[in-house]
Amino acid sequence: MIYLAGVERIFQVGDEAVNALSNVNLTVDAGEYIAIMGPSGSGKSTLLNIIGLLDRPDRGVYRLEDVDTTDLTDDQQASVRRHKIGFVFQFFHLVPRLTAAENVELPLILAGVDPAERKSRVQAALSALGLSYRARHRPDQLSGGQRQRVAIARATIMQPNVILADEPTGNMDRNSGKDVIQSLEDLNEKGMALILVTHDPDLGSRAPRKIQMVDGKILEDTGVL
Amino acid sequence: MLLNDTIKLALSSLSSRRIRSFLTALGIAVGIASVVLLTSIGEGVHKFVLSEFTQFGTNLIAVAPGRATTTGISGAIISNVRPLSMDDALALERIPRVVAVAPFVQGNAPVEFGKRSRRSYIFGVGPEVPTVWQIKVAMGRFLPYDDPRAARAFAVLGSKLRDELLGSENPLGRRIRIGGERYRVIGVMESKGQMLGFDLDDAVYIPAARALAMFDRESLMEIDLLYAAGSSADKIAKKIKGLLIARHGAEDFTITTQEQMLDVLGSVLNILTLAVGALGGISLLVGGVGILTIMTIAVNERTAEIGLLRAIGARRRQILVLFLGEAVVLASMGGLAGLVIGAGGAWLVGVAVPALPTHTPWSYVLLAEILAAFIGLLAGVLPACHAANLDPIKALRAE
Image 1 (cartoon, chains in turn green, blue):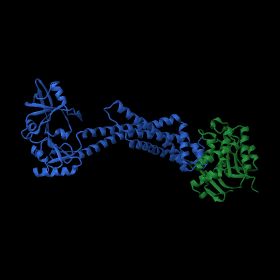
Image 2: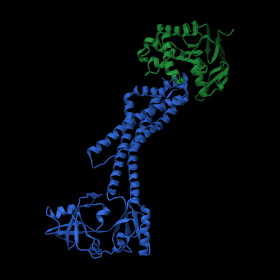
Image 3: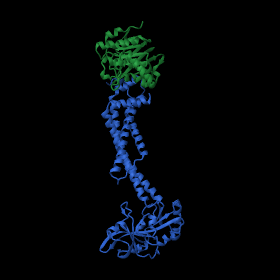
Image 4: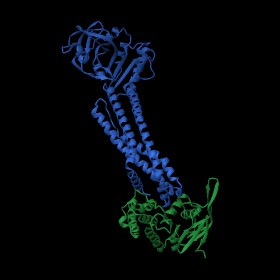
């Protein structure tokens, strides 16, 4: 489903060119569960951003479902993000003035889905994550774990093929973190691919396939046979 | 994205910052209110002035001596080459469809009755003046149809002059002195009030030929003609021109139809309204700058939110529309409030100061509201473009 070959990403920092990613090759099949680990600055987040079409590689090929993404226009990339990719961030990124339900509804609004259909889909997504009773609460009235589960509901409301989670438990206590990971793994079991970026070796060890990154290169990939 | 959702999202973000939104909208409200109020006053003055001028009727043509290419007072009042004589006035009467002709000469002289004396306007006129100027005689009668070249010394008083000079005495048949000459009062005019500061009631009407002699003038100042309703002013003006050129040998006079005068007056007053409207527009501009400022701040504050929207699949255009929508909604709400304040203020002014007439045309109201929305759009473009062009990764990191 995801195919990266010889991907490079170079950032210009002052006069110096820094290789955030160099010669990254990666293939991900539908429904896989991968943990990407490595120290800060190893290029994990850059890799995730490129997979999520927020960033473009400077060199190399990235094919998503056999479509070469480097040729896509800005609008086409936005449309791919909307329909095929779900993002979960460390800092939740919920819109503070909107309720939980309204936050979950946002991708449907952007896609122009009919309001009547939106309502039932939002309700279903919230109840699947055990948040129905919090639908009318604003983010500042929710706990960290609850906020992240609202964010997960938002990421999955469009039924994407892959969820990209960047340190999803980095900002909460262990118990809430467990709930959040459980929610993500449940979704993975239903067939969505899950790519998890994390510092935490305990979290990383739960994934069947682990990727170690250092200095913009893949050091170890347990999935490559 | 549906229009309905765009407006809802705009409203939700505006209402989450109530005080700020209120103050920004207030800027536009003040601008729109001043535009509406000022143009209302301008339009009111427009109507008022036009009605002042049409109180003498609309089927009027004035002939003045001297040639002026522009309408208005000709320089010939001071010195003119060829006088406009009483004979000219008599000749004009014979033009078909001309109902009445009023020769006119004006001056200033002391009017005395007994021991009292008062300087007043002296109007040297013909007997047709009540018809031409649409003034009524309140008491007695107007100047009789004497031989225009040797009219008898009769005078008709304006209502104010009568009050000042004769008080409650019966004025009819009294002898007064005007500029040292003896006159007999045969009538009193109805009060006509002031016209643009010209007190028509503080005046005395005497035969034109006598006024010419009194002021030692050769020429009339003006001949006013009343033509039958339904006739073309231009056609009659043409006939007057032909006749006078035949008599004078050259075009040394100026013909002004009331239509022309009202046109000129109307366009002058329109510019006046426009000018006061533009003054109000300055405050509207300031309101627009307020929206620009607040939207720039909003984009900066919500950078992370913009990054998120881009990550969940918003196109650049959608971000643009969201922020533009916010600016337009803000400006329109301010505009609406401004309309209410402005129209209400105009109404209040009309009630409280009846001398200052106001009139709020609905087309202006609609135009002002569209203008407000347009200003919002204009003020929103820059910040919204900035928001749409943010790099999503950097934007996401902004928190």
